[in-house]
Length: 329
Image (cartoon, rainbow, N blue to C red; front, side, top):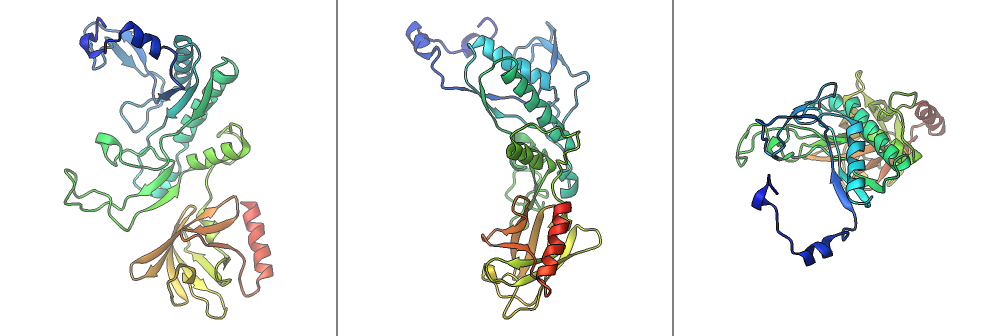
């Protein structure tokens, strides 16, 4: 109170009695750690009277964000000692990395290491220190609007291609704003690391032999069978295995691409693939977006239908070949 004065609320003895020990849990947002040394001349916006140092700490895209998992564990222990080991849920923690293109954004090993370090330190706090921690939420699921930094900083586990363009209604940076109708998403390796942790119910060392990367677009380079129509389709990638692709209908009575989405089409269409994401251009400014479902080994489309490997003219043999390739991946 000597530092903050009337900025701090006043409580009566009865209010203090009612508030003491009344919380169901403490929600903790934590991102960064600093070393601090006393500096009487450096008041700071939080009245810290300290100089902050980050020697030896990896730095994120954000100017204020440094990684130190041990600092996270120290904070958890401080809360436990201060408030008699309350129930804690970590409601935010995350790492920003710059990326202008989906492929570069998806290869986010720095973010994987941040989460691996922080969750391993949290597990030590639970197992070794006896702390009452019940949950951990990563910030964030998707790249999104980050306060005064706008769309410049990316915290997401999934890359969002904003398709930047002109927006006359934007208060600033009008020439570099997300545009409608052309955005798409791709999973980053950090999201696949988290999925591995969830599925196996254990922390996975990203530097070990376990592959924590997401699938390559080559999973699409084969024949498929449409769950809604029974029609066969073939996707052929370009030489790079990313970017444009051709989608064709295999011989079959009345089969058309996109028919399950209610859009009649000719027997040939173009698509865009990036990692485990695919978008088929249906004409008339319409498109069908889907993703590779690694657990079910198939493409799941936004309309609820799916394409499973197989469906060529030689059907059974092609499906056996496809499944051998998938098993190897």
